[in-house]
Image 1 (spheres, rainbow, N blue to C red):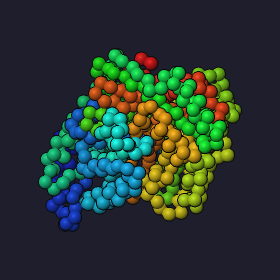
Image 2 (image 1 turned 90 degrees about the vertical axis):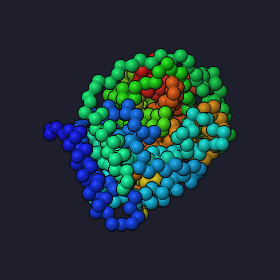
Image 3 (image 1 turned 60 degrees about the vertical axis):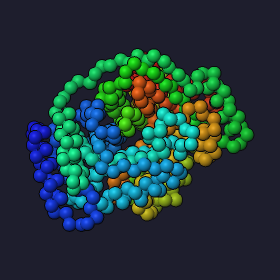
Image 4 (image 1 turned 60 degrees about the horizontal axis):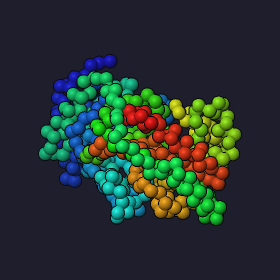
Amino acid sequence: MTFISTAHSLAHLSQALRQSWQEVETADARWVAVECPAPNAAATSLIDLKTSAYSVYWTAGEQTLGLPSEERFGIGAAELIQLTGSERLTHAQTEVQSCFSQIVCAEDLRPQLRFFGGTSFSPRKDKADPSWKQFGDAYFLLPRVLYCSSATGARLLCLSERHDIDETLLLAEQLLRAAEEVHAPESRVLKATERQDSVPPTAWHALIEAIQSSIRTGGLEKVVAARCVSFEVAQNPCLSTVMTRLSQTAPRCARFALTVSDQTFVGATPERLIMKEGKSVTSEALAGSIDARVEDAENVLLSSQKDRQEHSCVVRAIEETLGPLCQELSLPSSPDVRKLKHILHLRTPIHGVLIDDLHVLSLVDRLHPTPAVGGLPQRTAVKWILEHEEAERGWYAAPVGWLNHLGDGEFVVALRSALISDKNIRIYAGAGIVAGSDPDAEYAETELKLSGMLSALGLAS
């Protein structure tokens, strides 16, 4: 592989940016976008770079087309869209398209420019938990400098306004130098000085009984109960180490790290909400779980009536949402099993061809929250969650992903995730509760789901 130095990349970038602005004739252009070659490095090694209040790491993992996915790490805010309220995704479509219309670049580069971000599980209340204040109801970031790395090489995608080329070059230099400095991740073990559980075992039993009581009265079919375990720590974890560990233990999962000022929302989720390319869409139902250590776990899970019932709720809801929008919708008659390191899930892949070329955010708005993270009926279950759960979910179990100027993109459900603040870490896990759910078994399932992130963070469980 050809060695590409930082100096070479910066010279290429500086020339391309200045030449592009000289050639711009359109009056409504705000940004020019160019790309340049870059030193090839694991994008996870760049995450500790603290040069901007906003950064994003994203990879779809190995689940995209069955191939290793490209990693992306972006810093700086070329554009930042922040939204509130129940119409946040509708407004985001308009604002994102307006931003893209002001960017001048080569046509083959345009589809690679992406907004990254997501939303909260539900719009936040006036007196919401301040821990999630900086993330808010929704935000979408178009990075000023985006590092893209794959098995075939690496490159930078950079945006610059006419009068701040030097600022873009400075960010690019900092990122490129970090890519040249190969270093082993820190093996940091965190010591928790305090641990708090939003739903300890006794309260969990009461919560499950309350859900099942509502199911018996006929108002609900399923509710997903969630727990938040928070830790006070003496020092924050090394983010590059966390992401490296997740890449090793959850290579097939989509992995993300969204940083806003001094907070980072990080996760490795097995569940895709929607992927859209043109009129082609892919979703999946992921519900029903078992500890991977159980003897003959795969067959036990496939034969579990309770888990099959929980799973069928999710399949039915996605099919009912996407079906009317598609000229074709295909899914198998029975689920397969998604095998992860600690846990197995029932999974049904769902593929469709849209009638009309809808925007990916429109599909996200229709699908979220699926019964895998909310319940059934959707609105009744979400209302129940908001009224009864002790801890605010924030962005846990919410859509996180990316979109481009074509309205294509990919969003996952932010499971197996944690919010890292100033020496405080919150880890989230949930379990789907139906009529036949056993409280102790469901609590054990949440402990199992917590264990992966605890290990990645270097916290003793």
